[in-house]
Length: 200
Image (cartoon, rainbow, N blue to C red; front, top):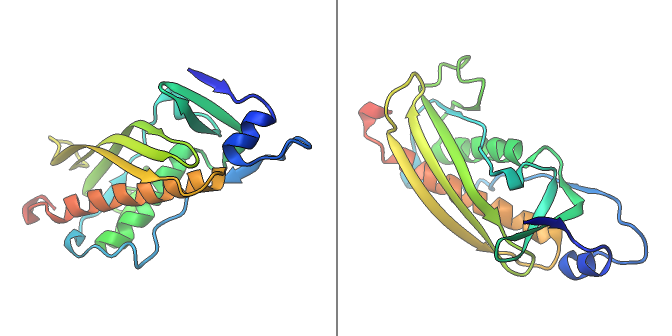
């Protein structure tokens, strides 16, 4: 179930928005890991990787930020929106993070794999990505690495990651998204680094 939060009081309690007048829309974008945080010695690979568009559940295919307000209940934060679309931002950040973490000179977003002769393809299917300010953000996803020209998956894994939301506002929720996407990037990078040389 998805519903807009009741104006004023509910929004004020949820994300610290005042009730005196309607709030202007705020647009959020995700950011990559710092170079220091991206250091993962076991993840080095020279693989040329194409990152496919991230698949999101229908509930997340909307411009507004979502907040979990109860079991199976999601509320829209109407005045807080994703500036580039959550799926596009996640794809962009995966590219940036994996390029830093693997040291590969060729990590690109679809559809540029053809131009750089990418050898492998990363697909990420998000099943759940939700939380609330002051609570916990949870990511459940399946990710797969396969030869770009076709063939069986070389890596296929399901993952569940969690990060505390360190604050009571929408900015804290976005910050937790950055951290949890960094955790996913690290897991993928380590997986890439442990693949047999012949498959890279």
